[in-house]
Image (tube, rainbow, N blue to C red; front, side):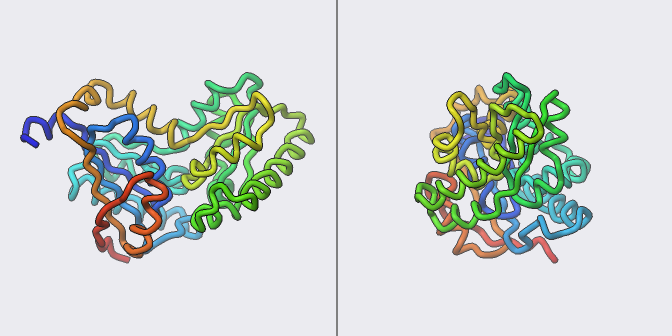
Length: 278
């Protein structure tokens, strides 16, 4: 690639506390197939959900700085719901490039899809406790009912993305949500997948929702928003022959390489081990 071509192609950094954010990277690649991507999974320090807001902000800022300073990222996508909910401001202050989280795009997509103004959000316990999706949906004029679904992440990582057990678990969670919504007088017609693991379960969710209900994949919503924010830079797609992806992890490189292709939909290749400190 010539220096001129490199300067024309956006360099995008993608950060997650683990490797679930590879679903976001997958969606970004579909929208920007000629961009250069650096993905960092801070696997040594997960789960972020059990940490304090201050600690999450420090970890996330360090990861963002690595992607910008060491990898030359010109645009950052925070593919981590916990970091997006609790540390987006800290990340924006830590780096001199645009930063996009995963929560607001999901809420905006829900607003575009919903006719009743009532939406359901399924996410991890930490994300639900932050009420970040409820706040983002409220800013869009929506009423949101959130529910933690702690069994889904281990089922995804086990590879049971089409298993009848997983389908049954999703049905149980949704029935509980529907009952709660009915008790509150809500009429939800849209469900937001508020965890980066959940896009791998999208088909099961679509099978489980009521006829006419929409399922919002927040990874796709982020990719669409990123494409719009990058504007004309995406026009440089034709300047390289294939997507450039470089993956980094702070621990568990073998697990990252083994499971990562399931989330990315393609081999992740060599994952480089880095040290961001304690």
